[in-house]
Length: 209
Length: 271
Image (cartoon, one colour):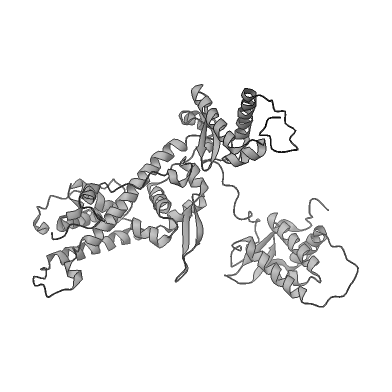
């Protein structure tokens, strides 16, 4: 048994010796990645294999490199707080020809705009989303909730106790993000040049025109 | 002044689809290559109105939003035409603020999210092409929020309760009532979920389209244990789509109906 073995009821055949233990772990993680119904967290993988989480992370990274280096049709990606074994994007055409139901329909511009507002400003109410977009969002919001990309996260205290919306784990998966912090930072305005030049909160129009 | 800006022969871009009035305005501002901090409001307003005309048959919801913006633009335009207070004694702060200010802020804010949406689209373009064995962006949602509705037996009003907690609350209410009753020791009478299911099916079929009151059904129980068993039986029937549970309005009464195919149905396990 290697030193990091955790569970006493461990009945797995685990070779000793640094190199071989690591090889075993890499194969084991590969197996788990194949069947994991959701992104496999290092915590889950550590619990199942009885190996320290840190070691699991290192070996998952190595596995990712390994897949990349041998130009496999699969790749290991870190997404939504876990790890996944997925087909490479370039084979999307083939995959969906074999299994058309796997086609992921692209989101409409309205849906993307709404998601952007929710992602950067959550939690917020429908009225707040509508204030930013300048259009009603009832329908698109319902669609996003149905697709599991946005969810109700609570209520704002105050008149009417309006529903607060936030993004979901599925949102992270959909956009291939490890965590919310991986979102690209909210862009400066395209017209941001003046904003910078004037310093302050640049949204103010120049005075005295 | 901007009002005197040369009015170009307006042409409208009918084919482009705009996400809303802010989107259209941004488009016009960019097309005209004008400074967003110094919008020639008369010119842009005119083009905005021309464009709206060009759009013609717009769906009503959408049109109203575009029209509100048109009114806002015209309001700003008229305020721009008013002479500024020239004497410092007039200190109504609203007169010192550029009438365009609020609109510019909204436009800038909107343009950031529009750009963020474009970035998201790029991310999605890549990630939605990668397929996991199970789940993933294209995979089905974990599970539907509600059990599939049984065929037929459509109650006339109300909708399924928001969540299981509504049903659990009903159980708790009855359990509290039962808890307060004086009890005497009697030999335990075993009641199984299967038996209760049979009983419930019989009663529900008898009740027909009137259905039964959810709490009323639970209340027939003599002991807490029986109430829990009845509750489990109801849940099982609900899960199997053999009954329909409906709440008429928030905090309204919960009612249970039998599905048409429930007659003679037994719990498969028979336990």
